[in-house]
Image 1 (cartoon, rainbow, N blue to C red):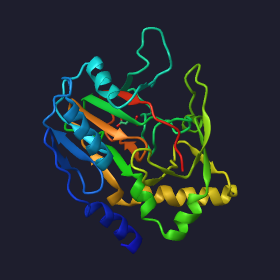
Image 2: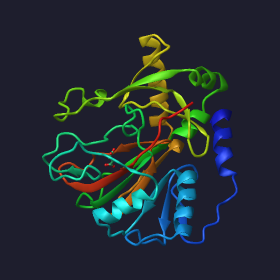
Image 3: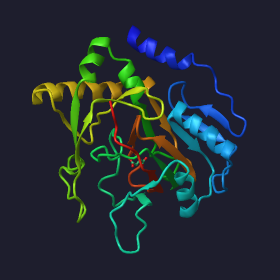
Length: 290
Ligand code: SIN
């Protein structure tokens, strides 16, 4: 492994361990993701529990909670501790704009999120994070895992020369890109926003790579050919570097809370013709800044 990558890993793995008193943490990998136990998310959490959850979220980026019985009201209440709720569906009569159904059946011809992406980055203010609650996993056995990738590390493992090139660039994120070859829902007004290619996490100040294959159309300061080649190299690195990733294997009634500001995710559709069902609630974010 190259020294840039070793240095990036070492900075994380040598940080002092966190002490937790109100919950238990079991990291999925040393670099991204942790299972959290000892909390019943259907109950109101105490300030101490919420404080420890916030610290764990910033340290591990993806938190997994098993065996939770949650109503939509519980789900939204939990999310609202981390910020205002972010609308996830177009307004429709009788539907809750803050709860997105994630449903795959034998009749599905496409699955939301079946490719590396961060949510809604064509928006001027993409969401802070999402809480996905999967209640029904594919039968028999499993499948439908979700992969997550650490965008801090994806940036930090680059050479100093590549980092300084990327640091000065901006990219256009286009809400129509994910709909290529399909018809967007009626009333969808596609957002289009220019964001820095490298941004800082608003809570930790750490830099991260902020381009993704679903929404980023091109890098503004480069020729189309240069932009295409550079983005392809970055996406290839995300897909082909296992230490950037963790994999969540869902069991029924698992909730996963990920930091949309610094991770990308990929839903795996490996269970056709079986079904998978869940609900997702998101939290408002702010404009990503360099
Ligand atoms: C999504 O990308 O919103 C869905 C993730 C999943 O179903 O695992």
